[in-house]
Length: 387
Figure 1 (cartoon, one colour):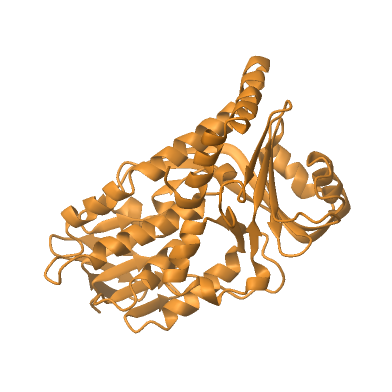
Figure 2: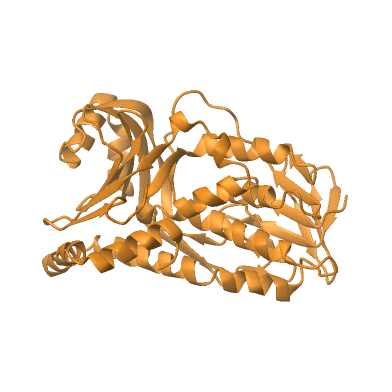
């Protein structure tokens, strides 16, 4: 079976790349071992989608088909330090309609999956992971379960932080576990959040409450492994009380909607996003601390940039040519680097227990809050990915 493009990984980044190539001349093979399964109720894993990425999802026919009743706009954000520092962002003050949109991971994944399944230029290869890869001068071959071999001119690794494609292609990755986990859960709240997101840099980690439709919030508590184990061991009533106390009652009393879950946090940076006939997107290319809320936005911007680079090629150009792929890598060099090291630095800055460091970081929050030019520049970056 021959393709122009083989995408390994049908998650958000991989599926959005396939969707972005609809209507093109490219024959696309999409490999996914575990397709999304519909789940009743609310998904505890949510994403803060920037307006720029919401625009990308609209361009590829996804955003307008999501259930609007399950999406919450973020109109403002309040950030609190551990010693009185505070920083406020407002969409209204910055001339925007919203700072971000909070969307459930599962619903976004299913809509992308169903959209790609309807594409005439995409073949879904579901149920098994590739077992071998051979990268040659003019093509790339992948062996699937049952000794089935497929061929293409470009393979895209969209298979997550533990990327098989990245390893097989010999692309080195710097991986540093934080020794932390992100604990997530959804709650009903007694007080209307009014589209406001909250974040607290605390001695026991970084706690965020993100608005969901109605009187609901989604929690992400990034904390040390041992503390995370303690949170997961709490019963529903105790967890609600602990989160309400930690958040200073910002949204009133809480009622647990989805049980707490946790996922490991780590920093990961690759030596290169491309090699001859290989490109990486999403978590296969970079992993950042969730305090910025930009992780999936980086993946969508990767997909957007790679799709744009491929669409611009004349028919005679080879999409797996390293010169083509290097242009994609250059286009994506700055944003992931800045976000990775900014979030890494912030997580370490607020993880320090030194009293002098504590005073300086809280002064920094207060000073930024009093400088509209700096604050608005940060808002512009958050919504567009560029200063």
